[in-house]
Image (cartoon, rainbow over all chains, first blue to last red; front, top):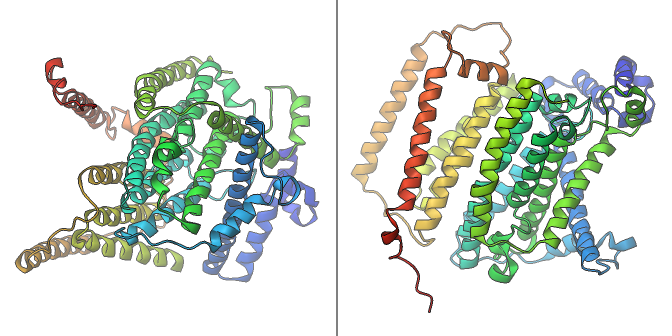
Length: 379
Length: 180
């Protein structure tokens, strides 16, 4: 297979043609690493590498966030039979950049009687949690900042902290809308985390590992959604539902239901702090979509079918990064369709859905998956 | 190893400073947030030890579970303008003495213990290893505590449901909102 051929060439990294970087990014990163380690002390090479990775993540964060806001407006316009943003740049592609510049220039309005320390801290907690999760996501072959042996558990652990930012924002704004929004969002995130965790456990049982690189490697002969057939499909549906709820998006967006709560927990925020929350929401959506793509649809692994070597080889010609982006945006598109087609649920309906339907189905599903793996009934 | 030392000093300084702030802050939600910082820095120490499983457990259970629960109950019960009264001098002096004595005791114990340095590489703790020893009945297996804790958790969950249901149907009709 092509990636293996590429891997054999690693020793002769100087003579690798540029297009091979797209198949294995370690060809690009390894010479840089070797060069840095050779020219400066290990301490400074670590610091410089961390700085490079940090800057790359910052750029990625901004670009993806802005693009997702634009994509959401276009998808929304398409569903509502409108044109959407179309004035700034071709197809209005620079509309969100202009919006961001506008937000940067806006005044940060101080809130009377607010707890200013917590009020300023809350957006940063949400953003920092986002970055910590992004660090563990495998974007492509060799493009993976940290590969823990508990990868997926780390993702669950860190993302469980993002609710703290939302709760703090709601409480410290000293506003009733914000407080109600934060309480709703807290109840919602804490309950739906359970479903996400159990859906992920279903796949961990099938993969036999928590390391994200191993999970992807195990999908070389077929994606888990096909390999694990019925229970994997159920887990996928549950994951998509509960991740939509966890990111506070419609039809589960009671935390910021604009018709009842103006904007929920970030009602009192203005200017760039509001933009932080707004961007974090979209990056959260990107994160849950890429986790779904990694666990169920093979991450950057091309579409392989068992032992069809010729077919697999053709699929390998499409770079892994394209596969990853394609799958992630496919899931983002599904989540966006949810928001613009379903009516908003009430809070009690939402909790009923989680605790009376999703959770029992999920527990049963984990058992079925364990049984199927035990009997070897998966592909 | 200088980067390791820098990170260790950073994490320990954060733990010490935020622990003190947790007990001295007069606003209850700020105290909870300082506690969150203490717990997150502790998990940073575990990450430095390459024991990622414990670090992730620390993050899920303490930072994402218990602190969220504490913050949630604060949100339900307290108002933003509430402040604790400043504690009396005698009270703070005595609690300072108690905590300093405890710290000195712990430090003496740690310094007394003869840690032997090894040249072995750090052992990678695999998830399979943890799972196997949790469910093993051998000498170093943890099946009994695992089962006991499971039963305890089940009992706690059932108890929570029983309390939340609060009695029979005739009681539950009383405290309803009048919609007029």
